[in-house]
Image (cartoon, rainbow, N blue to C red; front, top):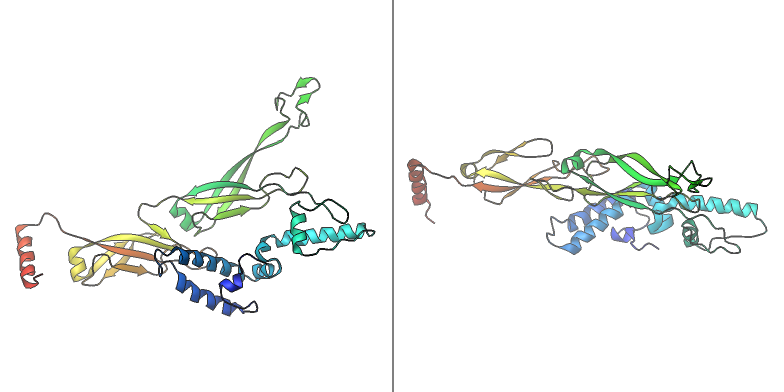
Length: 324
């Protein structure tokens, strides 16, 4: 059973249609969105879980794997391969029988934890996963980015065959270690809209298996540098805009920055300091979807300085007309 039941998180039955899942997600996303529940950490955490559940259940292939393997759905292909290998092993060793009592047997064998005994087929353990951090700007996160990642590792020295010596001499290439330094460069696509802390998986670019099994994976952890203007929350961008006093009083037009240049915003008359305007669809791209978040522009009314005598007279007349 999965530690997180995605169907329960979205409050739908396992037989729910795609439309029912989508409607349930929209309803819950509106209810628990951080903008609706500012400062509520539990609501924010539940919002993340809802998004995680929808990401899996809205994808036909992922949902099918989840229905079969629960929380370990990401390893479905490896499980299928392990089952095939064991079926072949059973055919070649018909005097023995092997049956999976449950899917956890596959999982333990797949990662090298099965008991090596009668009736158990032992498979080489995969290499360890590696983790590295990649730092990008908010602009790069908006547009997407291709980065060249350099991986440093070791391989057996071809000159001494890993022994560290050639005859009685110490190998001049590996200096007796039996290994040489290897450098590998990978082109990694960072998707548009990626969030801070996101993990990008690069299959079989982790550590080698010491037992002849498959390599581990490489996980790149994305860190997005702070932006001088925008604060990002989910797929939305928050920014403060300066509005002249007279434009706030009489109405006018101001510029709002965006990741694709300036936008024009009509300010209605009587706009108060701190008023927030929503520019729909002008925020960050939503990963994997043809949509964007919003820009939330907060008004900061700019008071005039160094008033002339005529200007002071006019403000005094206004004060007389509208006494506090």
